[in-house]
Length: 202
Image 1 (cartoon, rainbow, N blue to C red):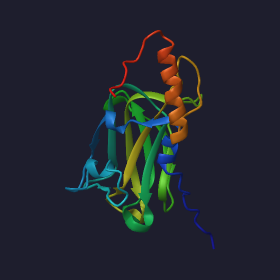
Image 2 (image 1 turned 60 degrees about the vertical axis):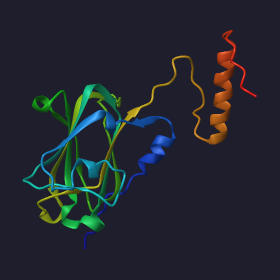
Image 3 (image 1 turned 180 degrees about the horizontal axis):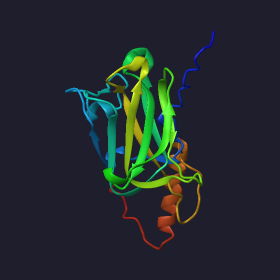
C-alpha cells in the first residue's frame, strides 16, 4: 500500500526574526480577502494566535491580497496550516502570485500540501535566487483536502531581508549581553565625535 508523505513543518518564523536577518512587514501592507465568514477575517489572520483563523465564505479560488504602498523587497512568506484541526478546510494546493496590481499578477510558486501541520515557508525569489521586489502578493487557495469547499488559514507572515549597515558589518546582537556591548560601542562612537553628554542629575 502506498503511504502519503505529509508536508513537513518549517521552523517557527520567530526563529527567523531572532537571527536579525529578516523583518516582518505585514503591518506595512493593506490586506484584503476574496470572502470571509463574519468574525473570521484579516484580523484573525494577523493576530499572532494559532487558535484563530480566516475562514472563506465563497467559491474557489479563495484569495488573500497583500498590497504595499511602495515597491517592497520580500524574501519569505510563512503560512500556518493545521490539518489535524481543520481537516477538509485545509488547503491542498496554493498558488503565490506577485505583480504591480490585480491586472498583471504572475504566479511564481505553486505548492501541493499534504496534511500540513505547522508553518509552511515559501521563498519568494527570482531566477537568480534574489528576493523579489513587488507592490502586491496574492495567495490563492486552489483546492482543499477532501475536496472541501471553504478554507482555513491560521496565520500569514511576510518577511523582508534586513540590510547590513553601510558603515560596516558588525556581529548581530541577539542576546541581552550583546545588546549591552552594542550600546557601549554606540556611546563610544557618539563621544568620539567631540560632543559631550549632559551630566546626570544627582
